[in-house]
Image: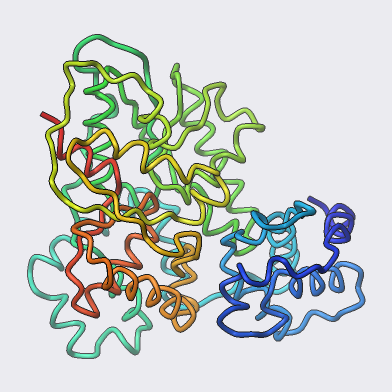
Length: 405
């Protein structure tokens, strides 16, 4: 979207205010500049050169979580997300993207697969040795600006296998390309292991091309279109070499970015969220999941619910497990505050939004909370550790894989 298109699209907003009750930052801060309507007005003024670029204006736009709940409620169907991405890119071209020590480290970490794997090995040693406890309690991380980042680290699972292809078990149905992403090969390997196990049990060969990289969501949200496009081309190259029936992703936050690649020739195969794919796939009668007598609450990430429009997929998928009870999570349409690296850059807002979820979870007390986005899961799980709330947080496919015979 160029500036002329931005102005035209922004002019479609009639400032009715129906978005206001659904905007997390407006509900929390009660500032018109931190509402979708107010931000669109600021973007209009900036694009039309009626407003100067100021720190205050940048702050209002930077505080947006890009949850896109406003889009779901907008009667004019204004493309708010595209407006914000275009404006942030224009601002970044002029001033540079928002920065911070922890955030900058994340940006470097996610774009270098070899660095991710090496750092993951070091983190496993760090966690196993007890150095984490020492670093947290000594205050060493605080002056480095890393205390917040260390606080969201989960206990790392087993490293991903080095093999790039996993053959199907039994009769073959097709070939799948599995997008791992920067978190999947470092902090969320458990989910990727589970996805491979489920897909191969259902008769699919699973490809994990070594050259795939981060989806670019962190860069896209912060206006760094140049790096986002570099990553997009790397992923296009990695998956276009494969003869696959579908490109599957596990993290809904990645999916909302990968979907943008469909129109740019990344691959002729459809790009599908794994929960949706597994729910639509025919399961053989011989593959009966073991019963589970537990209460499961489903957290709906904004990327899954508002952007991908697949909010029903987790419940449909989990219904395949005999004996489970799905517990409704109140206000599931509301953002948890993770929003990529937002939880690092705006901790006060992010924590308040998360605390609302924690209070709801404390009331209903499920045995397990499932979330289809790794960032949301890390953010919520960190809050639980801080408050002593003992509820396991995992991806829906991890729960399904546990129940395989």
